[in-house]
Image 1 (cartoon, rainbow, N blue to C red):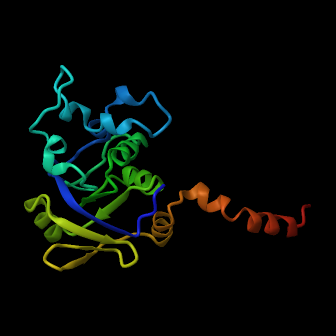
Image 2 (cartoon, rainbow, N blue to C red; image 1 turned 30 degrees about the vertical axis):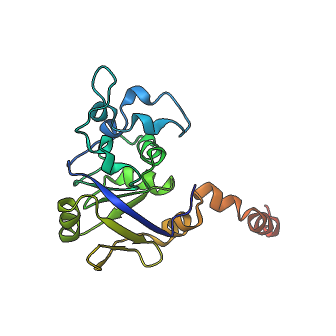
Length: 193
């Protein structure tokens, strides 16, 4: 995983509420256990017509979305099933952070465990972002702030362990493996009955 310390990007706005994981990555694409290549299927039913051609009116297909790594979504993003493929598809497409006023708990957990930052904002800042698509923002994980182009820095909640993993570019397993020597030393000192 790529570490995230400071993320600067223009935003791409998908204002729909209650976007479920089947809309993020339709079930027919869940035939893989790897992350690579899932980005091409991100929002497949919205991005592509039945003949496979790109729908020019879908926000991710528009030229302004190119290079944007921060998605501003409507309320209750990632509801539905618990598929880990949803954050994988977003990340593989190039999205590093999703901003919303509400995330489904399982999606939020899966995102954090897979290097995708869910930024939970209060309604006023979120509404401003929805109304101003394509603006440049800065996300600072050290201070857990999202800075708007107006200069206003808005705080968002993030657990210390999740922040550590994101800033170091490690998942939970990587965190444990990096401490293998300490774990072995502790285990060797334990007396077994």
